[in-house]
Length: 156
Length: 126
Image (tube, rainbow over the protein chains, first blue to last red):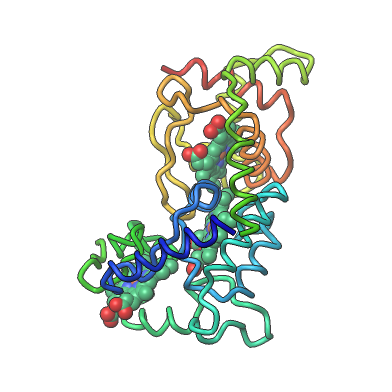
């Protein structure tokens, strides 16, 4: 209980101290998540997917977008708890595909597609970008949770 | 609250198992019941095994250099212990990545012999 109240006070102070833009999508610090979900790509912001999407993804890590990202059960549960606790809930908009399955990619969400509709298919495929999931190729401050226009640079 | 506790326990649990690359070489040679070959390790590392990737696709053919994840483009620190002292020092980490990466490149687990050969080769790189 004590840990809980200290961390809520800290969160409250942080919320008061920061002008709430620039790092809207900062990933709350967590050593295990950074280690396990930041080894093959940047740590994606939990706020950008619905809890159902995180639960679905975390229940099939051996088949993670064509890669084996399998984890021991203790860590799998700890990370699922973290992602669900910080998930975007209903703010993320449509959370399921046409067949009713939770969307697994941030880059498939309607919100993402809308924000990026001006980017042509050829740009996504550039060698310097490779994939829509490579957020930090264009969002130079993505690691700090900052996706604002003034930090975007699309590489050639 | 529950996940804070789990995370605290995990952090304590993972800090206790420092080992050296030689320990892993010995372990896998013992499991294989045979000595290793650095030359065979190099060939294994740099060849495709029926799948899209070789080990070198992400770690480069010169693992003293920084690699790049073949799909996501993320930088990967060198694998060779001579230039990256963190490599082959933690059993859980070594077992986890052999499990995942062998599955992704060979569609099966690596044998103890293959693991011993790869480590033997990596240890020759300066």
